[in-house]
Each structure stands twice: as structure tokens, then as C-alpha cells.
Length: 168
Image (cartoon, rainbow, N blue to C red; front, side, top):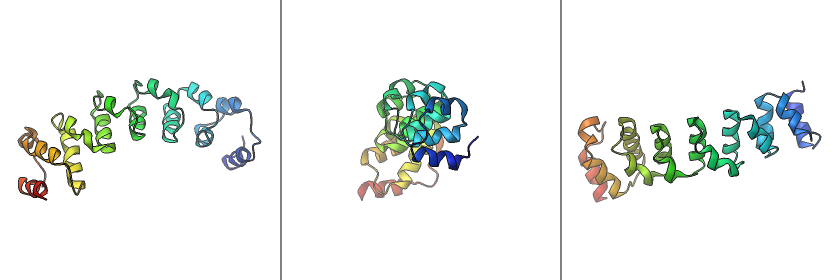
């Protein structure tokens, strides 16, 4: 088998044209080089390998497959879609709280939709409030008024600090 370096050189020089054979025979690290260049994406998708699908998404390719992948049972694929900002309005209601948290990390405006769900989501919203110099008034009020304030605690954020942020 050709070394990865030689494979990359041959790709860059246009000497490799039979991508089907490459995809069928080579390990993922080689296939990723095709993905980086946007080559043979449809053929790579047919392999159904979650690692490769995630790479395709992260490199911004295969967007025509996103509507299908958003229903994928592999949460890593759904999380990769979220990282691209795809279908956030839908993923905020995903069955996995990790996906919902990823949505909020991508776009803080969704924090209000998860603030009163699980402890993990409560903690994620608290971290967002901590990181943001100017969280929205709506988010701060929701955080202060949440029943989770007493249930899960506030870990160092006092109501005084939040009220100060509200006034600032």
C-alpha cells in the first residue's frame, strides 16, 4: 500500500482518478484526504461510516444529505450537524440532552428552551451566563426565577451578581 504522504502527493498532482477503488480499499485516514478536497463524497457516503460522515459534515460537504442525517441514531452525527448550524430549531428538541446543549453552545438564544429541563442542561446554561459578559435580560430573569435555582443550585452565581448584571 502506498504511504499516506505519497497518496496525498498523487491526489494533489491529479494522478489518482479511480476514487471508487480507493474508497473500497483504503483506511479512513486516506479517505479523509478525499473528503478534505471534496472528492467522491457520494461514494464515501455509501460506506455509511459515521466517522467519515462526521468529517464530511465538518468540512462542509454533503449538504444534500443533511436532511437524512439529522435523523441518524448516532448522536455524534447529529452533533456535527449542530456544529454547522444546521436545523437548530429542530435539534433543540432532540431526545439527547447533549445535542440540546450543543445547540445552546452554538446559539445562546436557545438557552431559555432548556433551562428547566435536566440538571446537565441547567449547568450548561449557568456556564453560558458565566462566560457571557452581557447575557440577555430575559435569560438572567429566567435563570433567577427558575425552579431549578433551588433544586440544582447556582454554583457561585449569587442572585446579587445576577441582579447586578441585570442593572448593568
